[in-house]
Image (tube, rainbow, N blue to C red; front, top):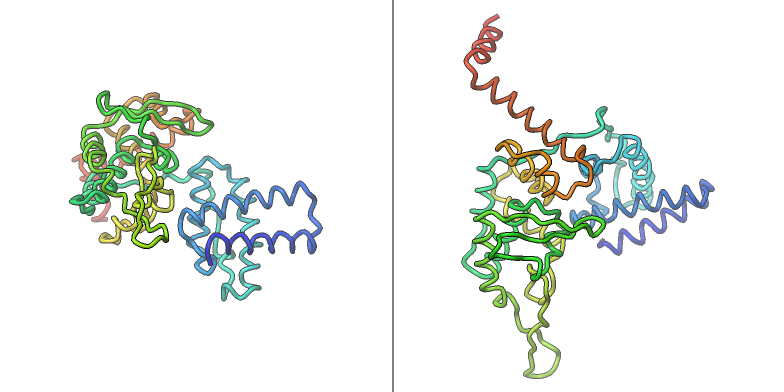
Length: 320
């Protein structure tokens, strides 16, 4: 069942709720809005209705928390999803209801999981960059991690937004807010190598006429497919999962993980919080501050692991 399958399923569910529960127009609109967000997340994650389980529901709630949704909002979304899950059971799409196993975390925000710099290097090394498509994939990874772009910003990047000579990309984020983000040397090298061979990705398309093939029309998107179209969010998600396939430890990663790594690694390296806020395109610095908590937790771990007094204290505790 595809995204269209989610459409039909949610439409039937909403109609049933309107009849059976007699919800007000306002309540139905809120319910429909919540489920539309969930459907978009499922589409981006490649999740089919028959694959819905407690892990997927938990991952979605964590994604909401990462976006700044309050616990009260998460609870409302979970209530909407419980109704949808029961619908899946009623329609025999699922054998059992996964929602009862899902519990909201007591704290409002979950610290995002990040990768080490070594993990990032392994992801880059997993891409075969001998061909044009491999060069494209490596450039996408380097730009996503090196510039901290949202996946929508990455796949929406246009050629005129890239200035290799200056080493910057001009990004249009949420609310069409414009920001300028510098590129590191690795990102510049990867992007330059890809752009030199970008046209080689385009394959001739059969137009149905005997002996006739046409080259796809040129598009202004930086990252393109063989059909001459802009790379999609789903395409990047699948590519990322493919790069991580050889390391079971990285099975959990998502495109947003690279953005988390960008911010965390900058702060761990001593970057100014305001500068990181500007590069991420956060309108409120409180959104960026979550990465300072993550950085502090790592510092505490490093201290406990390597400081002689801390390690001595832990050894004494173990001998009691």
